[in-house]
Length: 243
Ligand code: 9D3
Image 1 (spheres, rainbow, N blue to C red):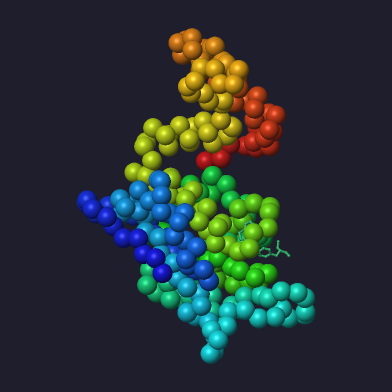
Image 2 (tube, rainbow, N blue to C red):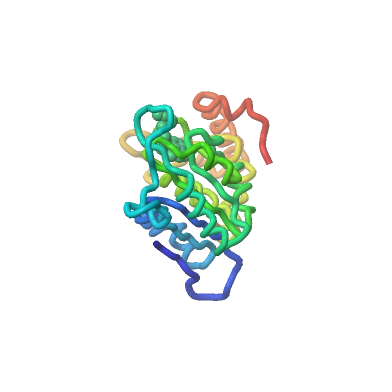
């Protein structure tokens, strides 16, 4: 179990992320550097793991079993998951319960924004094996998938959700960056960015960026972003903008 408490400084409002998993040790390194580590140190978020094995059944702390009706692979039994959820909810009432599953709703920025408003925080349940017993769905508030590719469990998806949500919490990013992300970045791909050197392996930085004409630069970037979005992600242009 890792527990990331408040660091120095004044007490501030924080969001809690509780993760139920068979592999709590997986949750250390993604939060050990960069913006996530800073948010934890500043006491803006608390990340706590809960080992599902502690709620396993019998001498062998069993958490899975063969599927009724046959078939390959194992399915996670509902009782250990229910017991783990009950234990966390008793300790921290009001958490929004999220099951990470390939059958869930596709995770997107607007969902991260919704989740960032769920006080006092989230209870993320990461499955393993071929999936969880169908009756677990009745124990959660929401089911999320992070995309159409096969992973080995819900742990990485849970961490993806934690990071995406943490970035949106007040005080985690500079206000400048977060505002830009909301107004522009929400619906379009990024425009091409350049820094030094002016020539790299024969490729020049577009001269307009060196012109000093900020109005022209703004329009050029907007055009580039639009064109790039049309070519690579036309789906982003046909969708209606979200909250
Ligand atoms: C054989 C059918 N598979 C379902 C698509 C079985 C299966 C594969 C992988 C069941 C569970 C898993 C483990 N993945 C997750 O728990 C998971 C996941 C993912 O694999 N991709 C994207 N998002 C997620 S969220 C949880």
